[in-house]
Image (cartoon, rainbow, N blue to C red; front, top):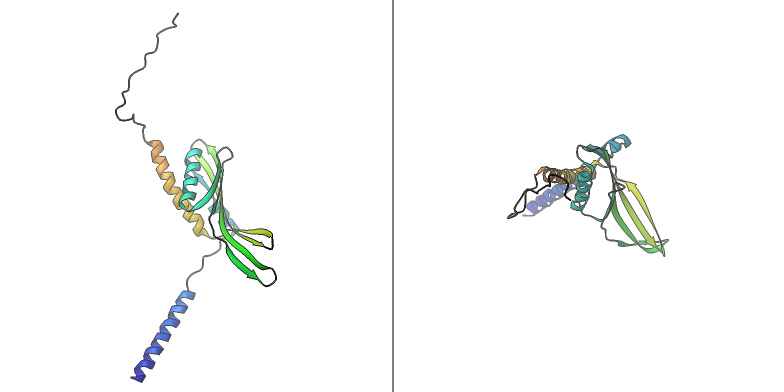
Length: 188
């Protein structure tokens, strides 16, 4: 009986070591080079600027961004994720707060009536407050996954808006369409 218990304990330890080493071997996201990042951030979309602009806002909303500010005239959209702050302690500075958010900046500009250039920049910002002062430190997101997630949501929104724009507008149910009489000449 004692041999069986020791064998079971040994097997359990081996399984936990195997599980721990499996966790360590999970692939880490690969940082992109500056050239790869620049190529991922810019796209030319074969659609009008209005459709691309509205689709970008929709994609950010679907991804959970809040505080979305958009200026159609300037072609800019900025948004941030909602984050909760946590209380931290530093032996030199005492108690403070730390908050991590993600910011998105989208720039949309028309190239032609049916072609639009879009530039997306994502960054992670860590805001800290302690002893009455606060500061923030931002770093660009250099991994492909958040950009790919944005483009996936953007493509969904773009396809919906493209179909809506192509669909003919039908008169409302029960509406009667009648020709308008145009006078043949000037009336006196």
